[in-house]
Image (cartoon, rainbow over all chains, first blue to last red; front, top):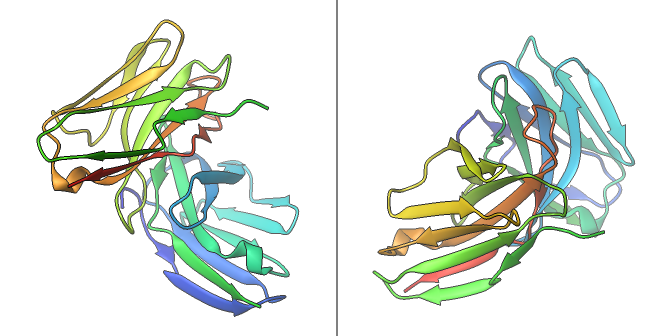
Length: 111
Length: 114
């Protein structure tokens, strides 16, 4: 991975439970983005949080960013079977444009 | 709304052959990025173009080349294919090469090298 780590690598939860995954990065960023990928399919953009933001919401998703710890978390509330996917965080480092992806967290939501 | 189009969606090649992947960005997007995702791996940045000029280069092998054309579509040319080139290749586009740009990904081309 180009940037840092995501944890956990895999997560299995019951439908209706919350899922939390974390992402760490190495140097200062301009923004951090979360993506979802269903098995072998395309990357779906979920949410973008800028370096001067601390928390952002989108539907059942909540993203936090702690630049002092160089970490971000993604919370999915009231999970559904359709949330089963891999979730990647990707950073845009300062003075850069490209996305640097983390290793991803595989989430399985059991019905 | 129009999305990023990639073709072909699937491609099977033999070792040492060449392959050309195409990407059609969202209309009025001027920046194109290419990423490679190996099996079970995270996407890795290969190369990007802004206004038809190469803007950044990542871990792209010398056997690969790419360009962006006057209509903003991009092509990734891969020669002397190796087994390790088997991967999903994503193209993404954005409206500007600015720091806060949101990149929109295409569905990917799955390349299998036999």
